[in-house]
Image (cartoon, rainbow, N blue to C red; front, side, top):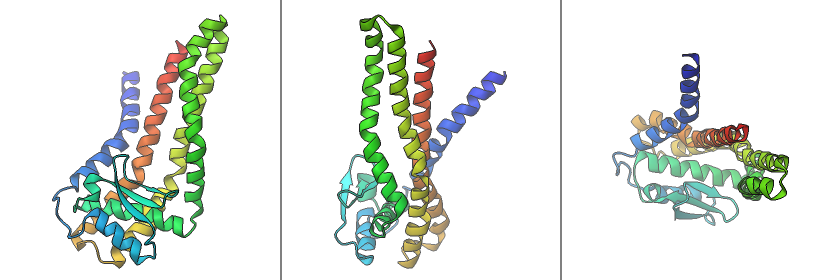
Length: 227
């Protein structure tokens, strides 16, 4: 019984944040035309108002994000063209990252460097994990396969660390940048402000959800290793 409760608790901790984030983003996606500006239009207006006319606003299929290398706010189609509370709030959050970049916010620069550094490491780690069983067979030394497997697992865990490191950057973009911008430009309907705070929390916690899923993948590989 204790094991069952423990497993359920772990599942709640791992999947709970992601479920809550998706629920909040979906809930305030309706009504779809609540605001006069789309997410893309609001992002453009906020960027221009803060002297960031050189930053592009683009549609993407790769998830809402700000690209500090190419100086672009990228929004998924539902946010880019959408006029819901979710669309404009997420757009403001990503503009918050652009403002961080413009103001040389140190944690954003650290995150950018970490992401670039770990991208190659993760690819290597995934390759090592795939090759480790064959190395043990080819060399006829099982320990080599185990060592390379462990090395690959360690490199994959780097992504979880990066996700946790991004948290201060995300909360700063939400509550020190996006929310003040929404207030300053009187974007929100008064009744929507508490809901916008929930959405900005969800936007920040997207990385918590991603990091927990990374840890779950690591746990799965560890279970394989123990066998």
